[in-house]
Length: 289
Image (tube, rainbow, N blue to C red; front, side, top):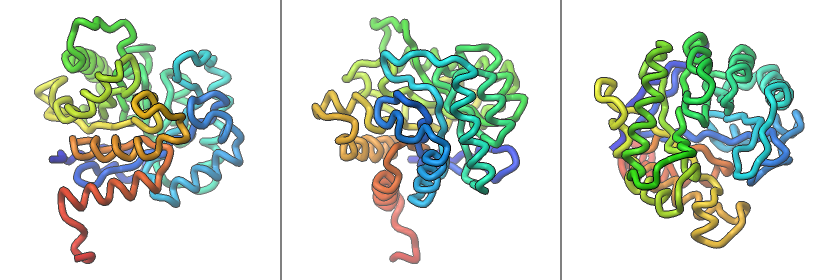
């Protein structure tokens, strides 16, 4: 079933992962993200959307200032800072206590965001991009979400074998920087460098990743990020705004297969689906009979 993890956060209670899934709300402050680009890139609208997601049950808010959709233009460090920092400052000033995650692969952006109040680094390059990223995480004692994105992957190597090697390398970098193993969260990177069939194979075999990268560290918490992605659109032939049902299916399957954190756009619907899945696996709360 679900392994239990206590993941320390600076200056706030730890993340408690196990039977109860956590929902991470996506806050893209970009003009060009594939699903919600341009909707929340003004500070007031970003803060309002964060408040709405928290009201609907978001446990973490993930703030990103650069789109990683296929064909998106790269964003310079200063431009990314100009997008995310006013939002983080405004959320902190508004008294938001929900943990904030910074979705970036740039060490300077991560460093500034953490100093401003973010508590988690979400690195799509899995600590295998800029070498300073692991050092920044260690310096601030924040957990890191390590995503699999092997752009030049050998298609002859089975996907899960490739992912085990990739994560082993990421974890080695983390350990060299003295990041503790209990502060590493694995993200399989649904939709990143994977075929349609591989995405669904990965969803089906998700639990096999937990203990594969390193034996001495036990297993790892897993983040599932499938919300509105092309793996749903290509299968169903629909647009991002029509992918809620497909997203909920992948969220529930991801939970049943061992996932802990679910990065989604639509909080309430995914939260409700996860509560039903949890009650199915472990029984409803005692007070509800």
